[in-house]
Amino acid sequence: MSETKQLPARESIPVEKTWDLTKIYADDAAFDIEFQEIQAQVKEASRYQGTLADGPQAFLAALEFVLDLSRRLEKLYVYSHLKNDQDTANTTYQGLYAKASSLVAQVSEAVAWFDPELLTMSDETIWGYFDQEPKLAVYRHMIEKTINERPHVLPADQEALLAGAGEIFGAPGNIFSVLNNADLDFPVVEDENGEKVQLSHGVYGELMESTDRSVREAAFKGLYGVYEQFRNTFAQTLSTNIKAHNFKAKARKYDSARQAALSANHIPESVYDTLVDVVNQHLPLLHRYMALRKRLLAVDTLHMYDVYTPILGEAPIRYTYEEAVEKAKEALKPLGEEYLAVVEEAFSNRWIDVVENKGKRSGAYSSGAYDTLPYILMNWNDRLDQLFTLVHEMGHSVHSYFTRNNQPYAYGDYSIFLAEIASTTNENILTEYMLQTETDSRVKAYVLNHFLDGFKGTIFRQTQFAEFEHFMHVEDAKGTPLTSEFLSENYAELNAKYYGPSVEKDPEIRLEWSRIPHFYYNYYVYQYSTGFSAASALAKKILAGEPDALTNYLNYLKAGRSDYPIEVMKKAGVDMTKADYIEDAMKVFEQRLNELEALVKEIEA
Image (cartoon, rainbow, N blue to C red):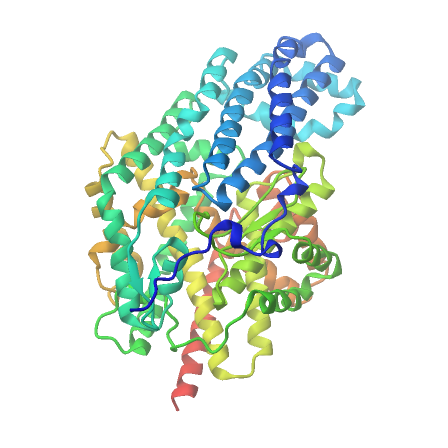
C-alpha cells in the first residue's frame, strides 16, 4: 500500500519560503511589551474625552492621540493574525491572536466617544478650527467623511456599547474560521497517481483541476460530505453573522445592511444592483462556455466537479515557484520601473509565505499595516493558477506599498472597492503577456481557458455570491429563519440559474454557502466583480500605451483614502457609477471565448 501524503509541519518549511515577521517585532516578547504599552495608552483616552470643543489645538491633540493608538494597534493585530494564520492549530498564536482581538475591542470602546462628540459641534466651529490650525489641513477629507455620516452616528454611550460588543459581533466569523480551518477532519482520497492524500482546502483546489474525473468526483463528494455533517452549525454561525449586520444597520438608522456597508465609502447601492443586472443579462455567455466545456470534456453529463479542470486535458505548462517569480517580473514590465522595483523587493526580502503546511490558513491573501510590510500568504503548488494568484496578491501588496509610502497614516490604506482593481489589473496584464509570447496553440488555448475560468470565478461566481449574500440579508430582515435547508434550497436554485442547462444539479453544491469565508465579510464579494471589470478597462489602456494611462494608474495606487473610491477611479479613467465598464468586460469574455473556440478547431483539425 502506498503511504498517505501528509502536509509538512510548520517547523520543517525552509526559512526562505516563509515570511519574515521579525520585521514587525523581533520576537513574541517584543509583541508582549507593545501589548502592555498599548493597554496603558488606552487608559489615557478618557483624558481627551470632552476636549474637542476646547479649541483647535485641543482638537488636534485628541485626533492625533486616537490615530496614534489605532496605528500601534493595527501593527500589533497584524503580527498576531499572521502568526496565527501560518499555523491555526498553534495554541500559542491562537492566544496572541485572541489577546490582540480583545484589545481591538477595548480600544474601539475607549475611543468610541470621538465621532459622537465631534458631531455635537457645528460645521462652522469645526471648519473654523481648520482655518486657525494649519496642522489640521491634512485631516480635512477624513473629518468631512465623518460629518457626512452624521445621521448614522449614535450618542457616545450607545457608540461605546456597540464598540464594546465588537468581539461578540465578530464571534460568528471567528467560530467559522476555527471550525473551517482547524477542526474539520477531511477524508483521505487518492490522487491521479493512485497515491493517498489528506484532503485539505488547498489540496481540494488542486484536485478539482485534476484531469482524472474520478479524482475530482471523490474530492468533491469527500469535501461536501464533511460540510453536510456540520450544515446546521454552519447555518447557525452564518445566520448569526447576518443578524449582526442587520442589527447594527438598524441601530445606526440605515435602511438596510447593504446601505450601511456601502455608505462608508460613498458607493451608491445602484453600483451593486447594476452589477447583478448586467451579469444576469450576460449569463447566456457563461452557459455557452459551459456547453463548450461539456463538449470538449466529452462527457454525457457535466457536473460541478467538472467546471474547474482544464478542458484541453493536462496542462502543457507548469511553474515552480522560482520559475513563476521570473515569469511574473517579465509579465509586469508594462507597469514600469517604479512598480517593478517594489516587486523585486517583495521577492527578495521575504514578504511571501509560500508553502502550505499543516494548520496553515487556506487560500491566499495580502495583509499588513501602515508600519509593516505588505505580506503575502500563499499555499503554493506548481499549477498555472498559482502564477495568476501570485501576481494577483502582488497587485495588492504593491498597492499597499505605494499607498503607505505616499499618504499619511490617516489615508494610508484603501477600501476593498479599490483593492480588487489593483490585483486583477495584474491578472489581465499577465494573460495578455502569455497570449502574446506563447506560440504553441495548446498553450495559448490553455491560457484562454484559464482566463475564461478566472472570469467565471471572479465576475460570474462572485456576483452569484453577491446576489445570494443580499438575498440572505433581505430574508433575515423580513424575519425568515436562515436554516440550513432554506439556505441550501435557495442556493441550489441560484447556482442552477448561473451555470445553465449544461451543468447537472448536483446535490452537494447546495451546501456551497457553508464553506464561503467571504460571507462573513459584510458585502465584500461584489467588489471582486466590479474590480475585475474596472481592471479590464485599465489594463487595456495601459497595454495600448494610451497617453497618461500608466501615470494615472500609479496615481490611483498612491491615492489611498485621500478621496472617495468612485472619484479615485474617475481620475484613473473609469466611471464605475455606469454600466459600460461591466459591459466592456463582458465583451472581452466573449472575445476570448471566440478565440478559444477558433483555437480548438485549429487543434482538432
